[in-house]
Image (cartoon, rainbow, N blue to C red; front, side):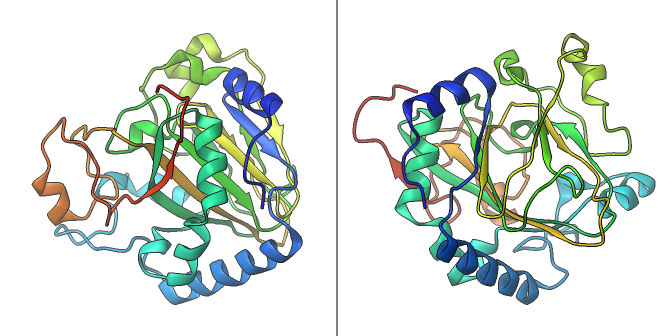
Length: 280
């Protein structure tokens, strides 16, 4: 596994808001990640999150109209916060090299895991509408970063990711849901409508990193095979609560007030601390 970005990779990320890394995992690492994630997905079963809210749903913030929910369910199979229920997934995501690479790329003093997310585009799955990540979450920061690890080759045919280069520089937090109108985000940000999105196919073992405010989406899976990916979203250390629940367990959510620092190590463990330099 790569453990540090190069100077040119940092420059590319800062300018574009995303970075493809074609050989992030070694061959042995890839096989381990596949085995661990597949086993964790099987063990989790149909439960998407690691908790059930008092409202009886697994994701209160993701409730949609019935038509949108049916569409969304055919975008991908997802399971969130597997690290909290699977020790082997936790061992993958707590590797020092992973946190160091993401933290140095983001240029922050420290990173905490916000949530992991296994994403599987099933055969002939719907495209993923363009969206931002941070506005869904319980903190508001322009410096969040996500890693997206390809467990299968991600191709134009099976639904690779697309990024709008430089869109993170807008530093706005208006968003749309992942629904049937894949370009709805550009109704919110019409000034970005004519900037071509960049497709990012990556081989199995490759990774994509993106800023939490970078516009991104994914194509449909036009093949009979699955496209598996394991992701982890990171929150800059010191980020504060903005009032949204997202993946926070109900009891912890109720204990917070807007402005509280999200430094609960059980929920959002610190996985990177810079030794010197970054001032974000």
